[in-house]
Image: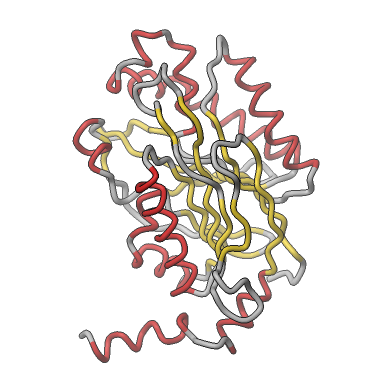
Length: 290
């Protein structure tokens, strides 16, 4: 693991409306270029930010949840190609929020992670919200992945997944020091549930958690019409970090990148010699609750 500081950019991202693919690609490149010019090496976009692609399909499509999912699948190849090119051009790692993918007669909410060489892998959302299950018919995925980078290991918990501690715990046990949480929440309570989950995961695993959020109103979309939340960086509430465990948080309703530098060597130090040792003491729970 490198001892250098890692600059990370977390997006507070507004859902746009586009007439064609070139205008969409130009828009995304501006976002990536801005973060790269600020020397960010890891960029995190929010859950379902890809749904702005559906604005190109016409109102009959984007006003229908089933038709939005069906039509989105035709754009997956172009979406992956765009982010592959951007990661290579700007030499950055990108967590491309999430994209609804149709596979084996089901839809999955999949978060793609890109390397500077253009390689990509993905983490599926495992635990579905009621909206995804009951109104949108999206299925929970399977498998927990950890991505190996030049600065260490990174994992993804897609939104609601961060509210379930065993997912992040398994990834941290496999070496992840950073958990990325691309999120999409339409109420303040929903945002706080994810925020509390992020902070809890940072506390119990003594790791960094990075949350990216959709922001703003999007009246034209049936799927992402209202978006509430702020991007933030969370850490253990322990020595060497802030007392409340919040390294940085965005301002509500703003469309912007939020930046922070992460010291990955601090994670090893706090796990070895923190005021408390949550990471090490995890297994002690089993003595009390078999």
